[in-house]
View 1 (cartoon, helix red, strand yellow):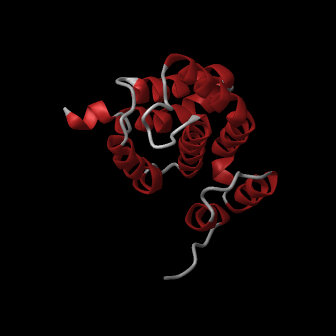
View 2 (cartoon, rainbow, N blue to C red):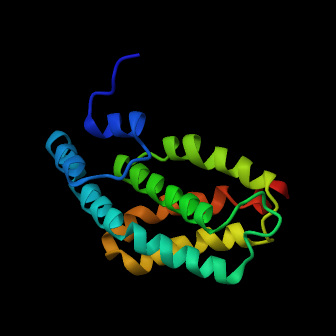
Amino acid sequence: MPEPQTHLARVIKNEPNRPLTEDDFTRILAEEPHLAQRVAAARAAAAAEAAVVKATVDTVLRRFDFVTGRAGYGPAKCYRDVGGVYHYAVLAMLAGDPTVYENKLLLWMRTIIQALAFPEGSIAFTYALLRKEASKQLPAAAAQLLDPYLALAEKILPAESVLT
């Protein structure tokens, strides 16, 4: 299979878990100037990632017990997982394509979530709160572009939505 032609496609295919850098944004803009609005939104989202994820997870951990009886699922994994969902949502928004995000992360993660005994309503609460925090902390244009991708996590991940 041939190597993807654009820098963005290569990042998504080969290195989707690494943080986006200023060099990435510069290269993406040089190759695909029509993505300027999405690149600006992704820059803002990447800059706010730590604060959005921290605010979300700190609130979730105060509200729900994610440690007891969950095979070592504690705060570090919660930050990792919420951060991963946010990061993949940013990549999907930048590309304007939710399919990699859905297929590589959300559907896989939903299966894992179903196997663990999370407190009732906690997953839905977490990803609704992630959307709310992103909306609060990002510039309006960036939040508007990112929101549909975060909404996918809120729709797909809660175990309640697939077990009923």
